[in-house]
Length: 119
Image (cartoon, rainbow, N blue to C red):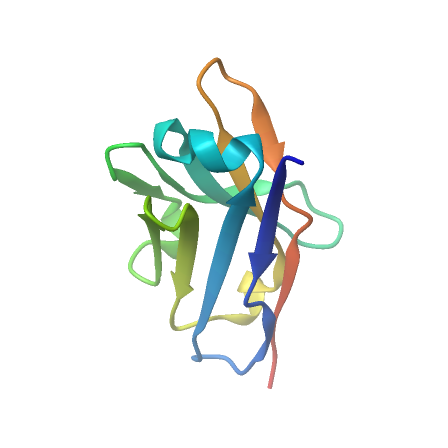
């Protein structure tokens, strides 16, 4: 079964940190090293937006809103992508989704993990 499974979300105070993980399975597992991986988020009433992307070569593309605070990384041996989130703000509150773009362009999404930044 093709799956992306996110973990690591939760409630954190402003200024705090969280680390999200996204593990692949099934056919996505074998294609991981050849895929661009990304993190997206969607806040209530807003459109889903890109947070950060990482290419097969490890080149990262963070969104302007998170530059200097969030870091995307990947472990090709573990077939896992991470999002280290530091200096969190209330406006970072959203459901965070993992995305995998496999060779050929097909996209796959995880089920999402909630991040809530509140005092």
